[in-house]
Image 1 (cartoon, rainbow, N blue to C red):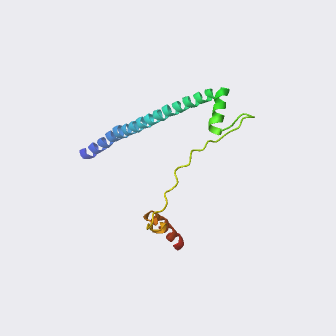
Image 2 (image 1 turned 90 degrees about the horizontal axis):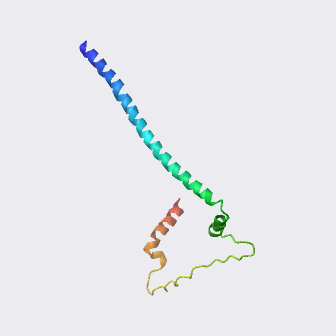
Image 3 (image 1 turned 60 degrees about the horizontal axis):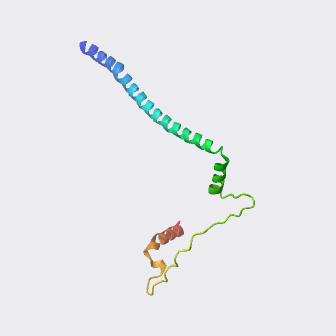
Length: 118
């Protein structure tokens, strides 16, 4: 009989201490994650507010239009300056295997072979 009472008392202690403690720890972890997410969102909000403040200035809008969208004012001409071409490829050496036998094309040939099969 005492064993039954001791077991019931032990189970009661477990229910009154372990489960609330586990719930408390889970809530504390959830609170920490929510706090961290709130800090990230507040920083993003601050950056967006700063960008919105900058976009109220006509000079900033013009700068963005020119840099990011390559727009020009009426009457202006836009030019695209291309980089200088690189050196020409070297001529093929005498006695080199054809490109089909090159090890770099092994994967390409394997894909072709698989494509023919399926």
